[in-house]
Amino acid sequence: MILMSRVISIATAEPATRVGQEEVKEFAREIFSQCRGDVDRLLSVFDNTSILSRHFTEDKSWYGKQHGFAERNTFYIQSAVRLSEECSMKYLDVAGLNPTDIHHVIFVSSTGLSTPSIDARLFNSLKFNKHVRRTPIWGLGCAGGAAGISRALEYTKAMPTHAVLLIAIELCGLTFKKDDYSKNNLVSTSLFSDGAAAAVIVGNVDPKFKHCALIY
Image (cartoon, rainbow, N blue to C red):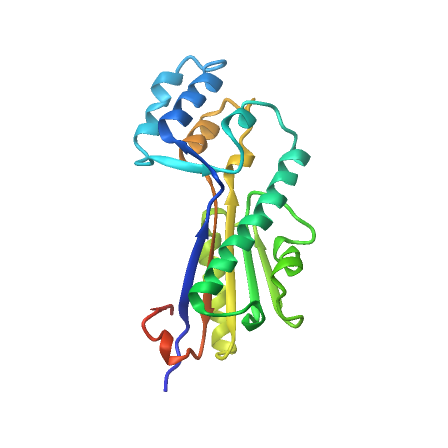
């Protein structure tokens, strides 16, 4: 019998603050018009994203003020723990698992720093098995989720009876700098938001999960 790794559950979590794309566009006009005479031409990027609304950890007024790295990173840690807990509990409900059923936690992020890492902080609330393995992955940006799945696949091939929890979280809104008037910052403001996702990947899967997605 050939064993293949499978994704048996997926869950997401978003911050409570939801903002329409038009509202973000007008916010960007207000901020970037202070130092850019071509702002009206550049704002067309907001209309070409096909985005209707996005979620952010803070309300709009927060982003209109100056915040140092230490303050923004504190917000990152607090929100990352909360959203990771939320999407992890959702996956447990979907998969019918307990935290003690997880053998390996892979945590992926790029938009903040934490020591100990966010996956270690989750031990205070989710009560994982004390022997669980952890792999924090930082700095891969948009490729982070794919890299996390790749690591989970390698692990479950080696340990086919084990279950891996993959958590990917990015809080891009917290990286916004009010005094950065570059095109890069404007385009980023038109695209990115905040949120988390979790997936459970297993190797030698129970027959009740045979309908779930295969990964190779």
